Length: 163
Image (cartoon, rainbow, N blue to C red; front, side):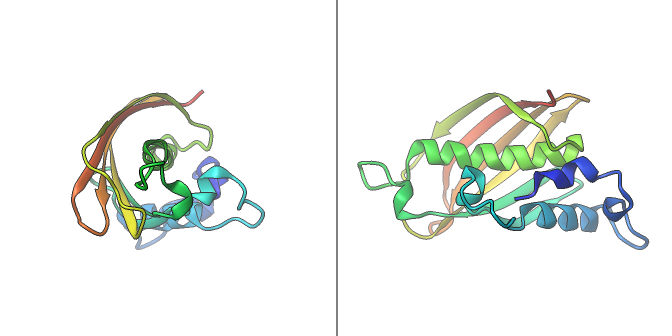
């Protein structure tokens, strides 16, 4: 991932282009930020392999798809709760960076509720929303859906800050 994209949102390349909608701009920027960066494979966020699955500029929503892999299982053979938290945190972070226009964002608080087990196969989708945003603080919420069953598996809320 290239979080540096968010530090350059005021540059001509990332401004709203002629004939482009805000929705189109958001999709273009997020897809560029989420593209694989050479040499970043050992960074945790990149190892999680998030994929852009959609966004809604008007609703301030981002959807990221994550593969569920064997290395992510807990001793019970299902997706580890810490991995679920990381998937939520990554999605919150990307969305926060977009709206803050800043590549440096920190998680201040995150609350997570687990509702069902996720088998170690297939994928999950995290759907995050900015509920309220100020100049330095953002409040977000998210749902993690089991990609195979299409069922709600976890919900989270978070507070992010520009340091």
